[in-house]
Image (cartoon, rainbow, N blue to C red):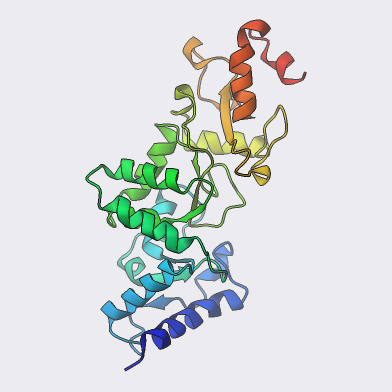
Length: 279
């Protein structure tokens, strides 16, 4: 019988072989050609103990996520491609996102465990967790755990962004340098209400068009830090309350600082937005 550490060592070695071959989750076309760990790997130990060891590795800081969690993200448009289709196979497949150990992960999992026990809605659990870990990279596996492995957890995260305005970004929704499988809360405040109902595909195209930077000051997510926790928002050139549509031509990217500045000075400029933008 293998010891706990031997089992975890074998699991890590198998997962790391994919990364050591130069294949990451960003290499969508090649990843499926390489072996991933699954429950049929019975040379290690029986399924229940094997999954327990995977959880221990996750909580110890290894970036291991299930293909089931990635599939849920993909179905909500959080990254491109069709790598992880919804299939029974996904429940027993895992991938390693990075060979680096996340030293903050044990703390985050402790926070997640406490929040999961609360008698509040799944949406509230996710928001509270993202609030507690603002500025940290959070894996899809952590949010799936908070939702008690419910299949609709990724949809709920997307709705928190698109309907309630929380700036929870992913690779496809505002921070293209993020790895697949990662969520990031830019700032612990929601965007203005009128920005909440912009469809994700439109939001994505506007951000890409504007090169993921504020069109007034040039701020990008690469400049983010805790002392200046701004994020990017979409501004309606013709105000939404005046009939401005949620279309690409009527939207422009601003950082939260410039966005707040415009709404504070809007009356002084008599709606001459482009004059203000170029000053």
